[in-house]
Length: 80
Image 1 (cartoon, one colour):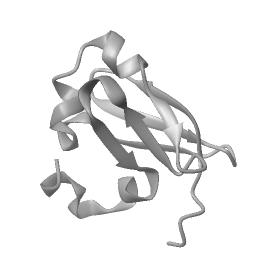
Image 2 (cartoon, one colour; image 1 turned 180 degrees about the horizontal axis):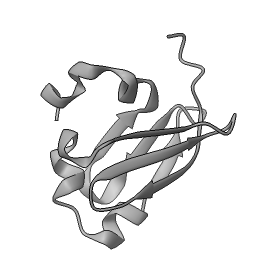
Image 3 (cartoon, one colour; image 1 turned 120 degrees about the horizontal axis):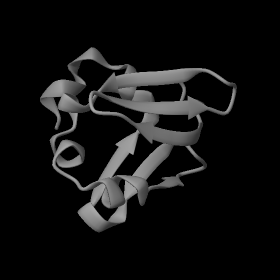
Image 4 (cartoon, one colour; image 1 turned 180 degrees about the vertical axis):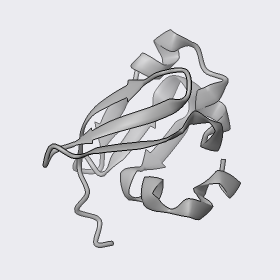
């Protein structure tokens, strides 16, 4: 990966974190991979901002950052 995967929107449901990319694709990963997000309130989850030229997501209120490209790594579940 070359770091050019850029997000446009972030959505959640009970099981998945969904990130819509600038090119129209959607990446979905299990919320179980991200313990801080799984434990966050709905208002905290909705209070995200795209950072680093839209290649990352920040949840400032819970001090959590996610590189969108890392969502494609199968070993991410060990990071949370």
